[in-house]
Amino acid sequence: MKVICIIPARYGSKRFPGKPLAAETGKPLIQHVYEAAARAERVDAVVVATDDERIRAAVEEFGGRVVMTRPDHACGTSRAAEAAEAFPKAGLIINFQGDEPELDPSLLDRLVEMMARERSIEAATVAGPLLPDEVNDPNAVKVVLAANGDALYFSRAPIPWARDGEADRTAPMLKHFGIYAYRAAALRAYAALPPTPLERTEKLEQLRWLEHGRRMRVLVTDERPQSIDTPEAYAAFVVRTRRSARP
Image (cartoon, rainbow, N blue to C red; front, top):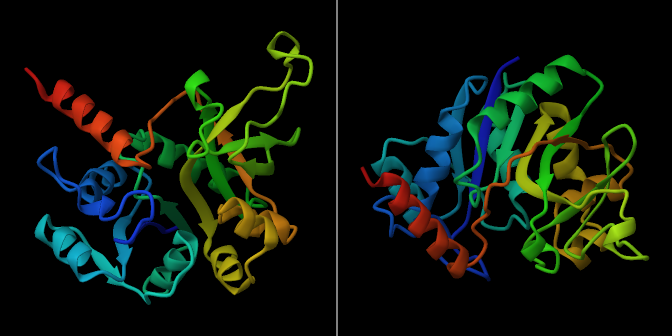
C-alpha cells in the first residue's frame, strides 16, 4: 500500500497569518513539519499542498516537494484531496496539518499500521490526553469516542462534560491532533461531500465526514504534542526548540 503524506499549507490563517513561513527557529515552520513527516518509516513520499507562491518557494528552498492547488479550498482535507490526484497509485493519504511540528513521526507509522490491519476503516485520526489548561481553550479540539474507538463527535467545547464534577468523571477528555489517514477512495468521497452545518458552526472539517454518517477511527496515544495555532503558541515552540538545541 503506497502511502503519501500531504501537508496542506495556506498563508492567510486568521489566527496566525503567514504561519507556515514563521522562521524564528532558523527554519520556516513548514520545514519543521515536513521533516517530522519525512522521518516516518511507513510513509513513501511527503508533499506540501499550497496555493501560495511564497510557501512554494520556501519549501523548494529546503528541498521539499510541492503540489500547487486551487486557492478556493475551504479546508485542508479538501486541499489534500486535490493534491492527491497527482499520486494515482497511492492507497493511503495522510493529511498532516502544518501546525504539528512536534508530533512524533512514529504516530504516522502507527496510523498506517492500524489502517493496514483493519481494512474496514476508511478514515482515522489521532488523539491524546487533554492538559488541564486546554479544557476551555477553543484551539484545543476535543473528541469523544464510541466503544469501538470511532469518533462520536469533535468540538472546541469541553466534552464530555462531567455533570457532577471531575471526581465522578468516568470518560477521559481527549485532545484531537491534526493528522488524518484516508484511503484514497474515501478522500475523494470527502471532497465530493457538501459542507455541513456542524462543520460550519464549529469550524472543524472532520465533522463533515461524521455528519454525513461516515466512520472515523481514533488512535489514542499518551503523547501530548503542542499544536501551533497562535503567535503565542509559536513563541513557546521557539523557546522549546532553542532549548533542545543547546549542547
